[in-house]
Amino acid sequence: MNLSEKSKQHVDSCRFCWMCHHICPIGNATGQERNTARARALGISLVNRGAIDLAEIMDNIYECGGCSACVHDCTTGWDPVMFTKETRLQAALEGKLPEYIGKMVDNCLEFGNAYGKTELCEKLTDAIAKHSAKTDTLLYLGVDARYMACKQAVKAIEVLEKAGIDFTVLADEAPSGAQLDFLIGAADEAKQQMTAAAAVMDDYKTVVIYDPTDAKVIKQLYKTYGIDVKANAVTYTAFLADLVKNGQLKGANSGKTVVYQDPFQLARNLEETEEARQVISAFADLHEMLLNRGETVWAGNILMAQYMPEVIKKVSERRLFNVKSIGEKAIVTACVSEYVALKNVAQDDVEVLSIEDLILG
Image (cartoon, rainbow, N blue to C red):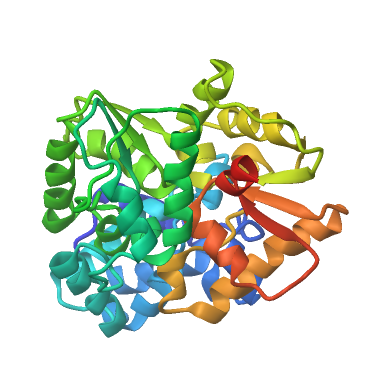
């Protein structure tokens, strides 16, 4: 397998190490050794040494959520996410992707989203139509919100309307490339989607990125791949925090006590932790999870639930258990994908809210 020398070094180091054994949200949910970073490195090492074929480990390679908890926790600087993504790229190049992943890649290329969706819900279509005129500010919703959580996408629009912001939402939004990057890494196809999306964004002074998954890719990976976004790209949470600070987004504190689920993309990748807290504190009384900010625990997502739904459900159940274990009864998310994952758990003990839910009441 043609991995970079850097990845090979990280693989050979991680396969001997147990130090992040406890940190993987998927490994903790399944209780299986195969879901640890060490086990994944062992499998890749066997492929590198010609002991097994790459196709034999690919199901396991796609059991990683890429949340970087292992990377964040590693005191010696090893990066399992890096070699996992490189392995996905190699599998794509060698034609050894699992069939279910190949289908999602094909959907991204044909439809612009991994789900193969082509139609928006009626309420979102109507909400977008109200903001079709060109302005200086683009609200970028992302494919998860548009196709899998349209009610939340509508609420994201309503929050900016509440603040009196003049903004544009595109009916035909170019995919950010985030899904292809997750599925096949730094492939040409992913970079082509990113380049096309950046070209659209350059028509605006400010791009407000609703989904942290897209924000991570646009604000961090685009630079890594040599893609320049001339617009001022800001996260939705940072944009709202400024609106609260400037008095444009107003509301009374309801007195509801909540905890905040830090999206790893914001907390670990972009090092943004306080902006969402500023917004939440304007509308509720904020308490903290035991594991928060950079130590946050991933709560699941929509994309992986397409091919391993029961595991993602267990991941979400564990995070809700974390809330219950400290006596809290409401959790606020800033990531539409985690919101959907948490809402998909049938339970009555913890109220799951998005920041938009909190603001709109």
